[in-house]
Image (cartoon, rainbow over all chains, first blue to last red; front, top):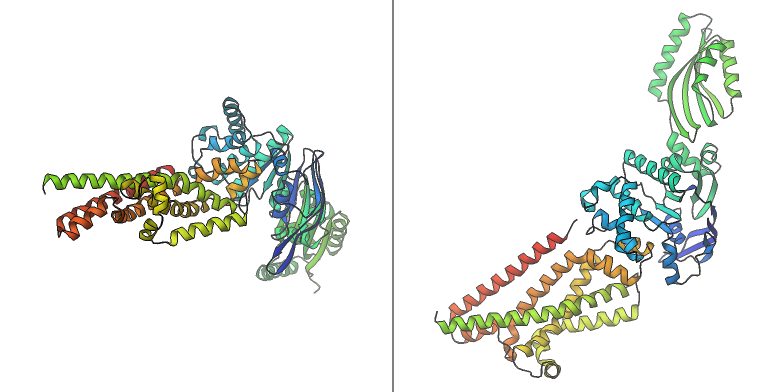
Length: 355
Length: 217
């Protein structure tokens, strides 16, 4: 579908040369939603601009459905760019055109006749759920609605690919979720390939089938979204995952909990108690663990604090649990949990009546 | 005020309107394209061409540096070539237009710089040609700003046209100098000034109103 091969791009700056893209090789498949994620300065913007040749790479090639884009003349490129619909972070809608006429713009540029424009725009506005706002101006609609117009406009010329450049970064979380749902819907309905460039893990997590992690102008990890985030191999990926799942038990609450456990242990001779920190990576631990299994093992498990991200059905994160039971039962429970794939246990506190 | 004076005043007003109107049209039809040329040939522009950009910029700056009264007499041969005469209202229109075109080019350039670059990028990503971008994005989006630019140009032209008397161009400014100042008729001077104030106010208000109506920001 899209084949990026050995792409390089260096900018001249007053401070010397800046390698925005060191070397990127990517293969994006037909019909998938492919995420390109990375912190700012990773080279995401340069990469997007290189995909539709708004920025000329120094070397390497971009191939779209077998058509090599690099090396085409500017006039040939114009025709090819219609096969790539683009959605922008800042929407980039024309302020003096109505919603209808904004969506019509790419069709006018492509030289489509008036009746066809009318029917295509109506169809697109219907698809993004904005038929009732077709006569409004961009200043009169919300950010989420503006991005819907942006998406409708990007789809106008029946492109093969939708290129989304931080399309949800300027939106609030709820609107972001709505826009992502819309993109997922469009992908399912039309089979269009979508490339999502973003710095938000939520975006990738929610809709991307595969993801490439970008750092300092190079791809450091690529694979199925669940695999990449459940088992991050590179520091940049790890930092992103831990930023989303960072959780620690505060000293204050730990002190209170320990006090409570000490008292409980005194009141229940022969019973011990502990607090565990559980790290989940690529884990398929179900809630059954805390109810059914715990009961079987003769301990009572209760959840104290948790921050767990669900990435395409896989749990990643950290949680704190309190365990109560006989010393042997606690040991058994710990072993049982340790045997679970993708779970790591760290003991925070252990309280026993014997001291 | 005697009827003769009223006639003089009406004639002078019409002369001013004629001079400002025709040179204003020249500014619109030649100054705006020149402004577009400045924008698109500039660094990072649609048709970047630094050589053309520098030459255009230098010519515009040179023209704008010459005081209008000097420009008027300096280009008399050109005026004679275009208007067929070097004296009168028609002859005054030539230097006025030559002063107004580069002025308009600069203010139009400023207005077009206000257009968000993201819109140009979006149009490029749609596969638009530079001409399509100018016609469908740049000019329409800059229109409210271009109207304001036109207002500034017209108001400046009214000021310049007061000097047209130096080559027998007539107009309100000329009337004010010859009757109000040289013949010691302060009431004529006062009326001339009032008419000019009203004219400028009208142009400004109408221009602002149109500009606001066209803007949907």
